[in-house]
Image 1 (cartoon, rainbow, N blue to C red):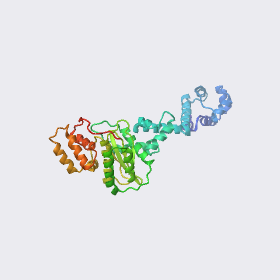
Image 2: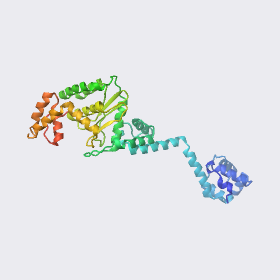
Image 3: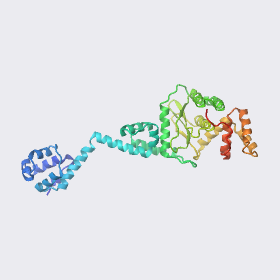
Image 4: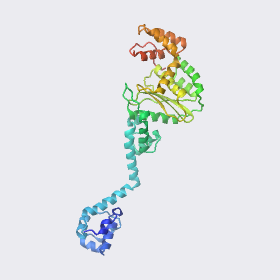
Length: 367
């Protein structure tokens, strides 16, 4: 049977320290134990010095010789082995990496990160490090905290399209990360937005080298313009935020049409003019989601950037009695008068009337 001191022996000290104490308490020598067990004394000495681990066969022989359960002896060995394993820096690093990876998969879209080349089929540690850098965090706990904070502000569900929360979360931080890597040297002033709108209407009307000219015009006003394609089920058209000295507008080309592109840019400019402040919250436009006051105001700003509300109301009143398949004639006339791309007004007409099946009359492709 074990003595009280044997039972109280700290198992974390290892089996060698335990056996040594037992022999001392019983005034036994290693040679005595060797004689009782038939195990060579050098082997017992190695075990006591921690150079050798307890085996099941040795534990059974010690059980007979010392009256201490073999299960108990093996338990001490196992506890010690586990302690050493957990304190192994390389193993601890692997455990931390695996834990971070598990949390990362629960928050971020791995397919999206793969499509961007941020993670691959290679080293897990490198994949985790590269992915965490996108979100600006150090470990899995931090990305989980970031994901949880986004629940109310980011994940506003679209009533018409399915939204993959993890893909949307990933898309947002890919956009922010891309903005960090893109620097411009122009100062930004909200007072410049009025002239910028005039320039953009000219660019959209002409629709020639449109994306390059739009970027040049926007960035000349001190606003970063980022194209981050939507990934997965993410019905988002754009986002705007102001981190650092220059604000950023992000667009996806989700629809790939000139009217959707133009409206997205103007919508985000509306946020810059009306809502965004340096270091404030991001404004993200999820198609079909319930609109809050700021999103409604940005929509109105965009609409009014193309045509004054009173002009639009008058046009819509005129078109009430028109055959929908001929309204493009009146729309073209008004568009020419005010100097905007007719597809922008035609697209708005279809959106407000729900007549999305009208035939293609004007050029929709972004050129």
